Length: 81
Image (cartoon, rainbow, N blue to C red; front, side, top):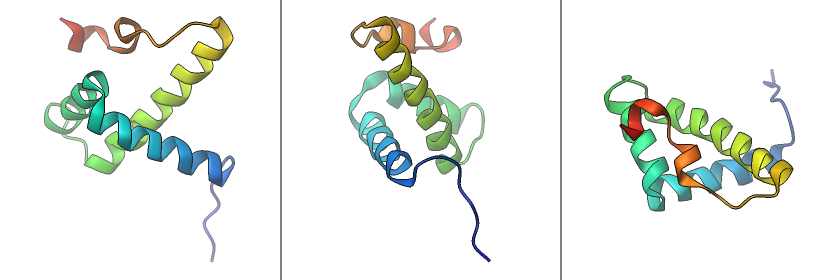
């Protein structure tokens, strides 16, 4: 039995790879991942999947508003304080 996934598989793979890179190199995504794992007690993979969705929403917002990446818009309020 094959499990169906939603969306394009290559796009999902690219977003996952981008998220892995962002968690490793971007301080905001690194902090959000650490917060999810340590404070919210999420498993690491679930945190990565949540950040994949966040990255996809950020990319869509950047494309719609024609703006560059702004880290102050990325951070949730509880982490920014």
